[in-house]
Length: 555
Ligand code: ADP
Image (cartoon, rainbow, N blue to C red; front, top):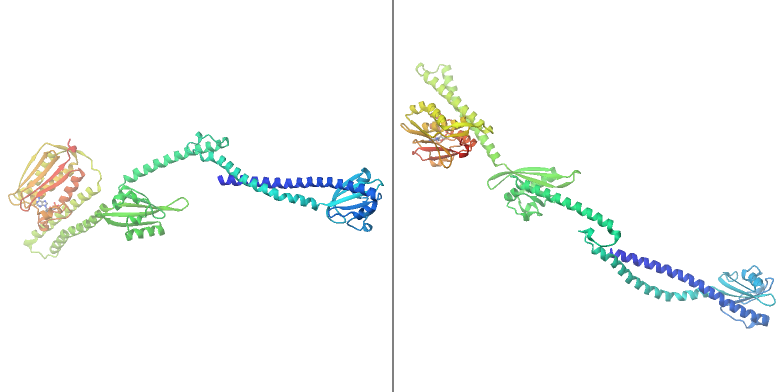
């Protein structure tokens, strides 16, 4: 701006100077013409007096490079002309200066000379015999004088130009300095040109609007950070050059990144081929998904192109979802269905085989009962198996079980009742020691827990063994413990016995009517009521299964 003002002022000065110079030259020229006319008149009067006295002889001694002299009779005929042949010259009565001189004694004119075809100044004086003596000079001599002035004027011009440059610089600085000193953060506090007031008011308004917008943006950024940082899913936003714009805490933990990664290429975080492929797929198709494993977790990376309303690409949003549970659950479901069909097939094959033998009359009369009993027991086993599968899937699918008051004493009593025969059949003594504790829980599930644990304690026991069911309130919670002095569980199997269809000894489980699902049901049912299951067992040394219900569930 400083330069612009300086240049404008300088150009304006130059234009004014050039114009002044032209006008001055014009007036100087007019002034010199006036002086030339005065000189010419003086010369003409002097010459006229001489001609008046000497007559035609005067011209013999007349010689001049500058002036031309013409003597004209009162009737306009030319008597003498110093530069042309008078005989060939036309009558001069129509010349303005001649007419004026004849009328008033003196006349002058400035025009293009007919004879010399040049701009000429004429001055004519009437002498005593009525004739007129005329002196003329070409204007070229006047112009010469005028042009002679130009070098001086140019010198003045150069000086003026230097002065103009200096003055322009000072003027522009003086204009610009207050503008440079303007405090645009507090525009209304400036004391400056009055003309700037409307502009400063507008700047002030805009400043306020910008501040408001910045506040809104900051608030949104905070909200965005609060939301994304509390997300379990990792989230990374990239710009269209794949540079990281934003990355939440989960993504940082997953990729081991730090805030310094912001502004860098995503590949600095992860150079895997999968990510590179995903980025090019996003570029091509707008979306890409793949699973990857990190730190023992299975994650799904979903990348989506971000576009504005005009379909212009703004960047990419990457979401990383922990799919470990889903993948495990899927695996477990597949394994479970395979196991279920296998478990169902075994009794069904046995039923089919036995029944076919009976139908085809291939069984001796005395053995028929054995076969019928086998069919019956396999059918019973099948039913138990189906019931257990249904229980488990109910536990899998039901999110919320209605709570009710559950009295442990009632539950344990009915379990002891239900298993009394089975215990007696195996010569196992069942005892119980139950405090009168009540919890807010799911009665059916507490029953299933107690029943399955006690049933196992009887089935995996030995002749004359003992099973004790106890319920006690401790500092850790309400503990339901089922203790037996049976075969026990080897250490290497203890971690897996809660898995579906896992058995330490399949034939023992099957022969005692086990389905391999009892402990899975116990684990799930306990989880529903936030209870923890623990096992203390040793091979041949009996087992104690304890389920600890939280004290908060007591009522
Ligand atoms: P099952 O129907 O086979 O009993 P469970 O899920 O109830 O299935 O038990 C899984 C396995 O754990 C059993 O097959 C058995 O090998 C072992 N087990 C469970 N309870 C006991 C116990 N009290 N004593 C010894 N082994 C046990």
